[in-house]
Image 1: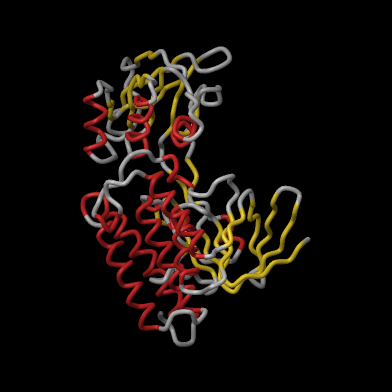
Image 2: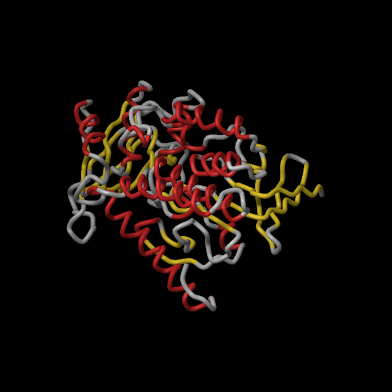
Length: 375
């Protein structure tokens, strides 16, 4: 086993991890960035659509272009990047176990920024184990990264932004989308995405679900049905559709395993994806040397993940003495203001409330467990 030491270890090279590494390294800290994938960038390189919001939030720029820009900034910052590297545990003494191929490393750090991201939820139904049933994110990776068609005719389950955006990108790849089914009575994503889907002729069936998928060796078709107000299938409402692929866009869950191992205290917030680590306004957890950023703190958009990464990177650099309190607070205030803007409006307000609950829980924890109390 080879031993490595660094000042800041960032786990996860997605939008949050890249931004965290950039901010900490630019301030002068020694930074190592670990990711299990062949290429850094996370979800950004699957996103061929343009970002929304303002110029500050990179509106009008496609996700993969943002990814390239961040990779260039990481290279210029001096941060060391280790790819194909699986961080499998965080142990006492702020030690991280990392495997890269046949090599095993013990990495010690003064600060860890955990940006592990989120994972796709699954949905069980008769036939759900047939080849051809996959997550919408997996289908997006196939078409946008690997240039492989997952199928010829797809049924999408879930009308959140992921379901709507991936459905449109499947159409752009030349794949037929039979329909989008949504269990709730209303579409879950932005109207602009739903409008593009409807103009393309794809039906969006709310208050509908999958009853079963069928096929001999792979998906050959699916039976969908309408739901009543109690979310029960309405007898006689079944429809049979010939499809060879079923994509599930039924939400994401934070990948919190390493935070649990590190002994962080958690809070259950359904709006953020379930159990999430408590953190303060600087993204520090109840383990003060472990900071979190991105979907591991609660599932949001890539824009929010990047801002949280910046906040964590600035806070880590400040704690290590690379930024004085005044300069750090100025930078953090700018980031928090951008985050606040992202969490406004019809969809953002729910996230703002959930995030406030997460930070309030941290404040209450500190009051109970620290002699001085509070942040």
